Length: 203
Image (tube, rainbow, N blue to C red):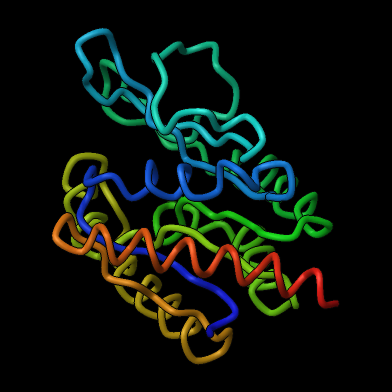
């Protein structure tokens, strides 16, 4: 079994919800982060914020501009990115995860790829003896979002390199998730999580 497991698939098909459900009984021994979707009262996406796994009871939350650690926010003048959230709070969450059994990263492969401090913290954990599970943003999803929020021209190359490094350097299994493969995805995540905690007990 691979050291790490990451799920990728189309946007809003339940990947993050499924992941949270699978780790629910192990949460106190998990570290990492969740990118929480912020919705207005009509259910329209107005932004995203970074939260710790410890406080992640839901993948979405009612939008409020006073919430901390919003890294992407929709305004009257368009979308505003705040990479400093990853540079400060994101790195802090990953460093605090080093004493946990399982590290959750939901998600990577988006705008945070341009933050060298955050990327280095991700790579350090992937290169450690810790087990990581998470969501990898697909190229299709980022392209769709990029049309609305704007993205740099080199994002595809950076994201492709990230995926290659994950597989070739860090023994990551990337599972292509879809609604049709939901049962398979649940089984794979549950088996991986169980094995991660059993491996911890043997150490």
